[in-house]
Image (cartoon, rainbow, N blue to C red; front, side):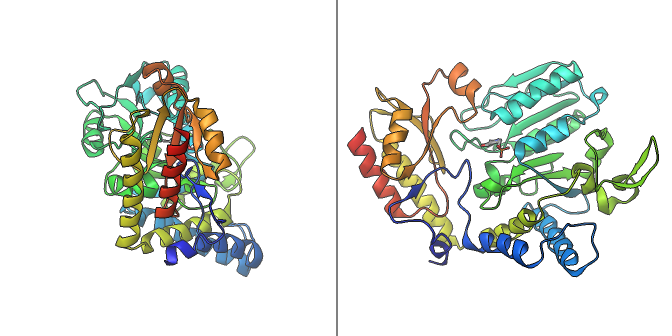
Length: 389
Ligand SMILES: Cc1ncc(COP(=O)(O)O)c(C=O)c1O
């Protein structure tokens, strides 16, 4: 029940089903953010007064918590903060040394974030771009040519929650062929972190706002990747020395400062600290909390899957599910659900290529659940959907 108290700001009857876009933030996360702004609002990394010292301590803690959450070692990886997943992927791709790569590979079920940024990278590097079709179970076919490839794929889809089940094999294969793997973990971090844990990609990009935290992005980078980065996005907080026409990057002098390589300018210190709190909160969830969550989305999937008129994209139950109702415009349906205080997304969810051009679906409705949802929410959605459909 502690869990539900953490979302006590929800009004009666409100059913939020858009967690794939932004999770609702539990109270401890909101409190952590408020505490920073009210009690020690200060710049990190630069100030010696007590507020700044406290900011630095907590930011450093969050970096460690992110690595611990992913079961990765600080010997091999570091964590930088940025705006969101999209920004993280672009920060890396736009600074990769193009001489090191022969192709860029992505898949058909990607969000526009990797889908478009890989188009831009292929153009900049003047190399071919390959769009692989993901298997129905989410795995990526590995029989193609991965030689010196940059592979950018999601670990879980924002359409139907499909997971990259062969992530380990993919990384092994690409590394053997001298390529790199950048994982879009926007959807995987909150509910499928197990798939990321102990795998060793070259970078993992995620959005804290989809991880029960404040609006923020993170990138977890394998230290070896820095050899392939040509820093061009640069400014304050990144240098130890500056001359008229030159500079010395902090990340070049001190391995403890590798993270500065991707953190130009002032950071969102309060939001970073709140992310640390969100990770603590997630780690405290009980087996029962997780089971309840699973029961909720499984029941909703079962309901949607049992209707003749509802055409589900999902093949199996996942926290995120997309569908359309035969003969009903999805946007109108979204409006009707909204009128009943059920908040769900409609459209193509930034996965235009796959949903529109590959599958030729009409705009869809997406239900994406979170830990805040209760069985009453599911019962309400079923009732309202029955009435509408
Ligand atoms: C799978 C996936 N990748 C990338 C993104 C982009 O995330 P952001 O908008 O936070 O950068 C999203 C957002 O929904 C997503 O679901």
